[in-house]
Length: 105
Image (cartoon, rainbow, N blue to C red; front, side, top):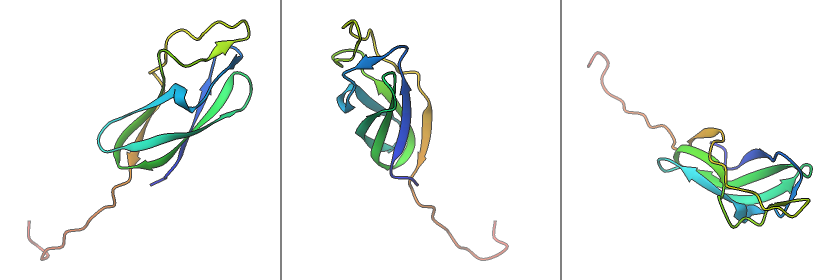
């Protein structure tokens, strides 16, 4: 029942131009969230924070396959996206109870 999630994104070398618009969220069920921020930990490691996490299902953070503007120190653009990250289960639906007489099956 969290409302935010943090993902660690690690590139194979130092990059620049990483921002929230470079990522998309893949979900199942009614799971929902939005990319709120991208914080550099180093030039190759970033923390991506999702806000407004809600619903019931699964959620994965993906790097878009094109148009990101992410480049290495030599100016080479990143090639392709990434869609094989960890998938998290989101359980934001409160449980309910159903009462009945004892001994009824």
